[in-house]
Length: 165
Ligand code: HEC
Image (cartoon, rainbow, N blue to C red; front, side, top):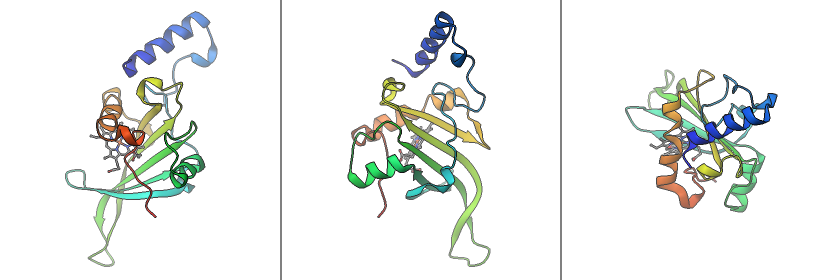
C-alpha cells in the first residue's frame, strides 16, 4: 500500500467513526505519517555522527531514545515498537578559532523515524518526519523517505546508521 493511501484510509475511518481524535492532523505533524518532533530528543544518546558531502555539505548526528539504544546494543532487529531515531543536521562550517577544525553552522533539518509496526505496516513499520525550523516539510519530500531507506538498507530494518562505539 502506498503511504498516501494510509492517509485516505484514516480519513474514511474518521468519517465513519466520527471520532474527535481522528480530526484534521496537527500542523506540527508530518504529512502522510503524522510524526511530530519528540520531546526531549536533544538529551538523547548519540548513535553516530555523519558527514554529507557538497552540495548539502552537512554535519549530522543521529540520536535515539532508550528503546533504540537498547536495541542497538543488544543487536535486536527489527527495532521494537516505540523506537525513535532523530537525525540532527547543520551546515558544515570552518572553526573561527582553529582552521583545521569543522564545527556545526546553521541548523538545517531535524528528521525523525518512529517505529510502530501496526500503524506504519505499509512502510516497514516506520513513520517518517522531516522538520525545518520546527515545521514539517511538504508532502513531496515525505514521499521520498521510505523509498530511499527501503532501496538501500531494507536488510537492516531500513536504518542506515550503525552504532559508533
Ligand atoms: C536519497 C536517500 C534518502 C532519502 C530520500 C531519505 N533518507 Fe533518511 N537517511 C539517508 C542516509 C544515507 C542516512 C544515514 C545518515 C546520513 O548519511 O545522514 C539517513 C538517515 C536517516 C535517519 C537516521 C536513522 C538512519 O536510518 O540512519 C532518519 C531519522 C532519517 N534518515 C529520516 C528521513 C526522513 C524523514 C526522510 C524523508 C523526509 C528521509 N530520511 C529521506 C538517506 C535518505
